[in-house]
Image (tube, rainbow, N blue to C red; front, side):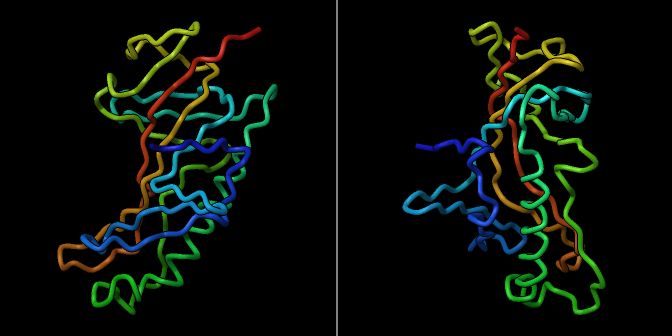
Length: 187
């Protein structure tokens, strides 16, 4: 059974990157808080305002709503921890697939300039959508910019991009997907 962590209770220092035994270019997330251990990580976000949706890329951009605390700054700390962990352990994790010539590395950010960018599955029917207290079909017309939503997102880990010669390019991406979207009614 997976347990979702409210973003307000999420502590970025409890996240570890874990080397995957079957794929050195993929790192998993592990969240440990006392006796609680969760892998992958499920987060329940506070209400956020939809800024833009790119249906062709299955991408949704969200920002804080002035009426709610969103705790989005935790994503900045989370991204910083990932970056530092990659810098510290990349050579150990990648072995001969790590190049000493690499002058920098970067992780595609989820949160940048006040905007949280999340991706949905291309199969929209795999996203649970709830509006007016009932589950509904999730369609392109379902969400509009300005809508207020709560999202449950699953954070799997980090994928490291590799060159044709099996060398890490220095680029990485946080693997995630939206599992559930709850439309918040304005009172």
